[in-house]
Structure formats: C-alpha cells, structure tokens
Image 1 (cartoon, rainbow, N blue to C red):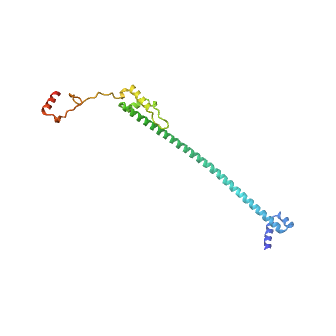
Image 2: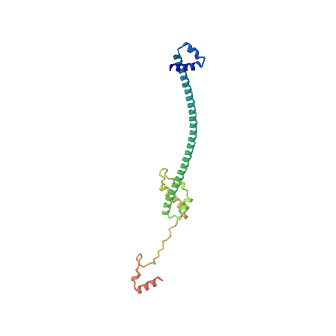
Image 3: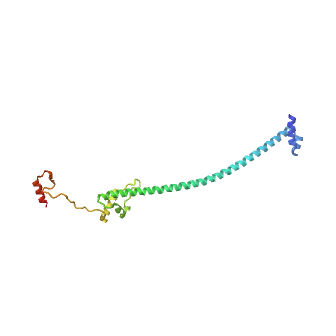
Length: 198
C-alpha cells in the first residue's frame, strides 16, 4: 500500500519540474506531506475566494434590496402623510359642523324666547363671528348668544313678532271671571240673556 501511495504522490510530484529537485534532496514522505499541505492550502484559498465572491454578491443583493425597501418606505411614508392630511381635513370639517350646529341651536333657543319669526333668516343676516365657542369643549357661551340675539332684536325687529293684543272670546258678563251654566237657566232667563246680547 505504501508503494501505491508513494508512487501516486511521486507521479503528482513528478508532474512538475519544480517538485523534482525536492524528491532528490528530501525523503519521499516529507515531500508528499508538503505537496498535500500545498494542495490543501490551494483548495482552502480557492474555497475562501469562492466564499468571498458569494459574500460580495450577497452584499450587492442586500444593498439593492435595501435601496428598493427604502423606496417602498418612501412610498408608504408619502401615502401615510396623505392619509393623515385627509383625516385632518375630515376632523376640521367635522369640528366646524359641530360648532355651527351648537351656535345655531343656542341662537334658536334664545331667539324663540324673544319671539323670533324666522331663526334661519336671523342666523343668515347676523354676524356669527361674535360668538366664539370654547376650543376644547366646543361649548357656546350663553352671554354671547344673548347679546347677539338682543342686538338682532334692536337692529332687525321685523324678524321678531310683536305682542298682539289678547282677544277675549267670551262676552262680557256682569260679574267678570264668572261663567254661567246655560243648562241650569230657565226659559225666561235664557230669553232675557238673549235680549241683552243683541
């Protein structure tokens, strides 16, 4: 066996001219060991070079993927900003609507107490900027509403009804506040009442 391995090693070693002088000067085992180590070192170097090339490829792929993801993140970030902007606009519109409804309600209640004929017309012709709601609770200040309605009453009295005289449907009687029950009167008393009413 040893002859086969040495002859195989010497065949490998004899394949190059550099290795021939080594065989002449050094023992065969030593030369074979050196050649094996050289071959192992070369294959290790080749493997390291291959791994380095793979790592460079992976790094390039990673960097490309990273740039693509950054582009996607930019798109996602832009989409999120647009969504937030839309939500802000929706919130502002909702807040404005709530404020307008609360102001209208407060004016309607106060104006109806003073006999307003047309609350919508009162709101349209009035300057609603004088009524400022609380920014946190959106509640309307009652004093500002009363002041607004009183100004409108003084400036636009046609929007409010005047107190009409009270019409009494009952005929005047001899004793005010006392009604007579007609079913209990006699025929003569009924005829007498009829004559007085003409």
